[in-house]
Image (cartoon, rainbow, N blue to C red):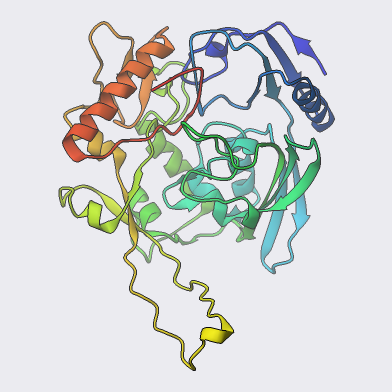
Length: 378
């Protein structure tokens, strides 16, 4: 496995923060990746696994450990047990948008609305990436992983990954640790083999974003290109000439709140119901069974709230920045914190804390960061 001269993490992360670590290793094959991970875990040294660097917010002090760059690539087409579907097994270091382009070229549907999301395939299940109503949970079949506790390699079905709104058993949430510390080696998706013809677009959120009526028909390629254009207008497609893209995408998560809390917010605040479990498992002990099953209690859906709306209506407009700071909200999208040029992690953290405080004061809700924070406190 090639150990290389450490590169500053500001050159390898889309927020452009972070010094050079103590040690850096490039893993070009699965065997190299497994080897360096087992070695680091056995030695007990601090370890940072780096994919595309698009979901990391790294502090200003050097990382005192090993950074492993996952550079494995490759897409393998496999049969699916479901008629009309195809499976793609993809190496963890493969570029996500390259996978989306490949799927569209092959006429495979299910991830076209997630075009332009930066990062690698191995990172996608960690926070259950999604856009415009599509999430990886909808197409993920299984992952191959290496377990940190044992060093064993295993194939785990998607049903065991705790996939939820921008979360999974792998996600290290701010202030907590992952439920299952592991590194994903490959991802297997199951996609519908629909070809290249035009067809209706499923999902109201995606149709609204693309300006389509329910009866309109378009091709997968059309969807991908228009999603990319929509994301470009928001500064959400990486572009070295555009400082609005020097970000980690959406810095704060859209909040999931109770229906009762949602009613305390202004009615114009965008919100979407989170579908409840319509078929919960009811277990009645035999000794307590009286010959009938009680009717399930009515349950209100939780509600997803637009964090961008909360930020703007707390008085923080696109382009907002603190005095003398090189960190600012994107001029195109109020949910993205951007590095306007050699800004420090502390400058970005100060802006994030200021935004959290304003939204809490105005609406009584604390926004939670979406990126993984390494050596940074909010």
